[in-house]
Length: 498
Ligand code: C2O
Ligand code: CU
Image (tube, rainbow, N blue to C red; front, side, top):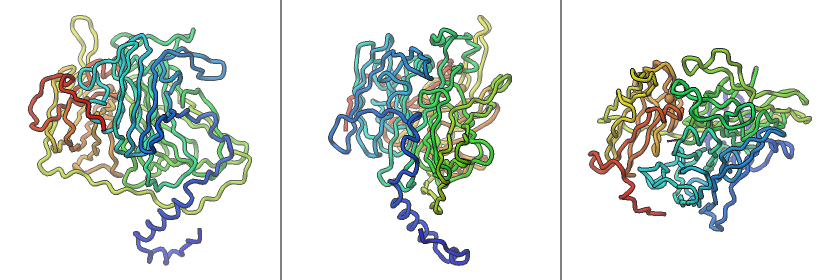
C-alpha cells in the first residue's frame, strides 16, 4: 500500500477518510490467503453441508448419536455427538440468512437444540416446556429461523445440559457479515471444550462427586480444541490470523496465552464486533462466551509457539494443585516473515439503549446447604429455580447481579444481547454486545438490556451447567403487558416459519 503518511500528514487526514481508505484496502486484500497450503489441516472444523441451492438459505441435517471419536492419534472415546463428531459440524451462514436444520435424535435420551446467542423466535429456542416439547429418541424436529446478527454462536442441548454437553454435544454456528470489513483471509473457528473420561476411556458419570461436584462445577479432565488434544498447526511468521473462539465447556474457564511477547488483538465478543479493538496479553473466556481475535504469530522458522490456558481463579478450589493446560501448538513455517502493511482499525458503532426510565432488577446469587442431607443448592433471590421475572415489549431493564457465593458464575440470557455497565452505570469499554457475562465470586456486575417484541419465556442461567441444574436458572417472561403469563407457553405456539 502506498499510504505511508508522515506524522504531520497523518494529523491532517480526517478520521473519516482513514476509515474509508481502511475499508477499501481491507476489502481488496480480504480473499488472499497468506499461509502455506494445509496450514490449518489439524484444526479445521468439518462444515455442515448446505442442501439448499438458494444462496440465502442454509439447510442442513443434524443427527444426534453416539459415536466413537478420535481425540488424539489412536485415542478413541465413545461420545455423544452431532453427525458423529465432536464438536458437531460448523454451521456457516451469512447474517440475514435463513437456517433450516432437520434435527433427528438417535440418542438413548430426549434432547433439544438451543442456538446460544441467536435472536431466534421463542419457538426455535430449544427449551423443553417453553419453546418446544423434548425431542424423544427416534423423533425429529425442524429448526427454521433467520440468523439476524453476525458473530460466532453455538448450539447445544437444553435437556440434562450438564450431562449432554459434557458427553460431547456442542458445535459452532458462524454467521459471517456479508459486509465484513476485517479483511483477514486466514481464519479459524476454535471450539474449546473438555471431556471427562476414566482410565478405561468411559465417559465420567455426570453426577460424579455428588452435590459438592455440582457446587464446584464438574470439569472434564481432557481439554480439546476442535475435538483434538494438543494438535499442531503451521503459520508463517507475521501473517495475521483471525480466530473466532467459543468456550463450550460445561464448567471450565480459559485464560488464553500465546506466550512471551505475543498479544491478542480482540475485535469482538459474543454479539459480533466490539466498538474498537483492544490489545490483550490474556483472553479470559467463561463457559458460553466467545471472542473474535486477531493473532499474528511471530518467531524463527522451525520454532513453535504453545497456546496455553493459564490458571484462572474462578473461586474456591479452582487453582490449587493445578497446572496450565497446553491447548495446541503453532509451528512457524520455513518461510521469510511476512511484513504486514498497516492494518486499518476495526470499528463498529454501538448505540447503548437509553437508560432513562429503565427498570431496575436485582439478581442475588447464593448457595445454601440443606439441613437434611447436606446437599448444596444454588439460589436466585433466595430460591432455587425462582418464579419468572417479567418484562414488557420495548422495556429497558438494568440487571444488577450480585454473587454472594464462593464461585464465579457466567450468567447467560437467552434471546437478547446486553451491554455490561461499570460502577457509574456507563457501558464498560470497549462497548460490546454480550449474552453471557462472568460474575466473579463475591462481586457485582450490572448490564442493560432492551427487550423487543418476541413474546415468550426466555431462560437465564449460569452457564456452568451443573450450577444451572443445581438451581441457578430462571425465566424472563416477555409479553405485551408485562404481566405474569401461564407458566408454559408450549400450547400457544404456532410456529411462524419465515
Ligand atoms: Cu448456552 Cu441456556 O444456554
Ligand atoms: Cu455458576
